[in-house]
Image (cartoon, rainbow, N blue to C red):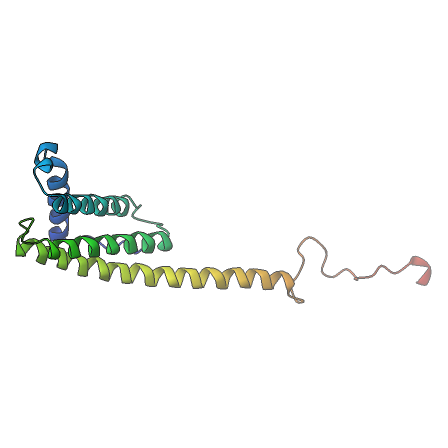
Length: 162
């Protein structure tokens, strides 16, 4: 994953607000909320797990395949949260601005996911080519064995023949 990918300030605020909303509310507040609205809180928490894993990736030398997998999982979690929010908008008092923010975040994550997965596909292709090339070098008739003298005759001639 390129180091130039960064989360926008809006996205960070949305992550922080989501984390605060799900963790700051006391358990008693969830007891009064319907089970449909509680399911939304669980979906948000599951989504935050993927966000934390992505934010925990090292800035450099991140395996692109791992990044692609994490962004696929985050994209899936975002889709579930967005579908839930749209379905329960009125019942759970979700504002239009919150849904718009989720849609914008989903689009942003989708774009980053596309870049990460394209890098993963390129990485996998180049890695396979390098492995094939290394294997072909071992079988190459023109390769030189550096452990022996390349100028020595392949068959030893008996001294009596000379």
